View (cartoon, rainbow, N blue to C red):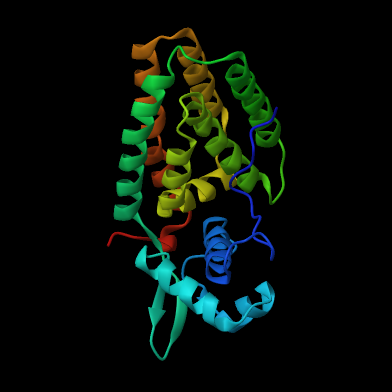
Length: 236
C-alpha cells in the first residue's frame, strides 16, 4: 500500500483539532511551501477570513510561530514572515541527522517485503514528479522526500519519533522547498536508491556512509539557494 501522506493539509473543521492548532499548521505550511515568502507581511484579518475563524486563534498561532523565528511580530507595524535563519537551519539538520542515524542503524537488514515495496514505490513516484514541470512540483517532491525517510521509522516501530521530529523542522524545510523549485533531482534519487539498497542488504557501514553524505548535501543546496534568493536568509 502507498505511504500515507502525513504532511498534507487535513485541518478542516471537524477533524478534532482546535482552532489555534489548525491555524498554526496551515500558516506553517504556507511559510514552508513559500506561499508566504520571507519579508512578506501577514494579515491576521485576511488569514482569519480565509480560514473561516476568528482572529484570536490566528493571532495565537502567529505568536507560537514567532517563538521558532518563522514570523516576526513588530508592534505598531505588523507581522512579517521571517527570513530563513541559517543558524537554526543547521541546528535542525544536526538533530535530524543524529536521530536518523540511530533509526537507520536499527532498520538496517530488518526490512519486510512491505517496507521494500514502500521504498521502491516511493522512488518510482519521486522520479515521476521530478520529471514534471509545474508549481506543485516542489511540494510533491518535498512530501515524497520526507516519506522516504519516514519508512525507516516505520520499519522499527518509531513513527511517533518521526512525527515529533517533522514538527520541529522549520527553517531547513523552507530551504529544501526553495531548492526543489530549480535544482535537478538525479543526485537525490541516486542517494535514496543507494540508501535503500544498503538498508535492504543489511550493509550497516555502507548505509551509515551514504546517510552521512546524503544528509550533508544540504550545504551545497544552501549555497545554490542563497545565490538565487540572497534576501531570503539571515545569519542570526
